[in-house]
Image (tube, rainbow, N blue to C red; front, side, top):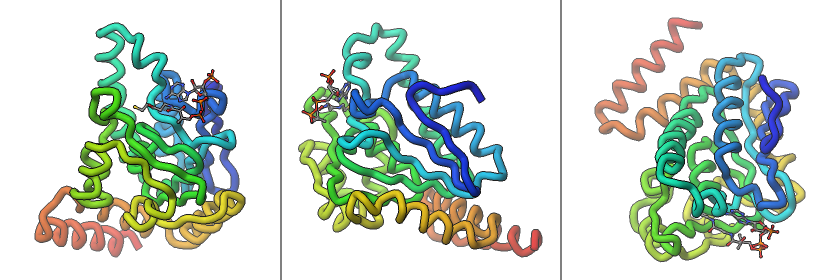
Length: 241
Ligand code: COA
């Protein structure tokens, strides 16, 4: 794997740590970050030594302050088109990772930051986390799946309010809306993420992957189709053991 500049990749004891690393720009999501995430997620999904992934971010102030506005506002149309294409790819790549992915969120979690976290399986948040979709103020709608993943996560009405009004959400409300699984003091965030990762790792790898697959794939199906999927995935597990 080539060396990275705007993310940090570390692997220890079955856990892959991916850290967004542009703290001076509040980890704004630029094309380089997109390229590096694409590469690292591709490597992770093929790496059976990785049992769980933790996605986190460097610096005190932000997980990610959204798309990099300097690129965003100056990009000529062909670059913009490439960017839009790449965005689709990267979110697909997030969702194609068979290992459980835990997002550990702190500070500003805006725009692409929320969208990235919505492609993760579990979201843990520090009590200083603040969530927002600044897109309406920029005259755009989310381009990284947010208009689809947010309502699927918190329901249509709450998602529409956030998407149309741009209202920011504090950690406590994010918990109430089920945007995040749990909130905790900032100092506990990574310890809790690791504790959860280790708990997941104590179970059979195929079982955990099957549960992930059944839930994510089932979200797009009718209940009847989902039950069929569950049967198939469950039977697949039985024949493997
Ligand atoms: N793209 C590029 N740079 C960004 C950025 C972004 N989305 N968000 C923050 N930064 C940069 C700032 O330009 C600043 O850089 P500088 O120190 O070189 O001037 C640095 O990060 C710190 O940001 P600053 O605005 O000084 O911090 P703050 O605490 O006063 O405000 C925010 C924090 C998040 C409220 C504010 O930075 C902001 O509104 N950012 C834009 C959010 C946004 O619209 N994202 C796009 C979503 S599609």
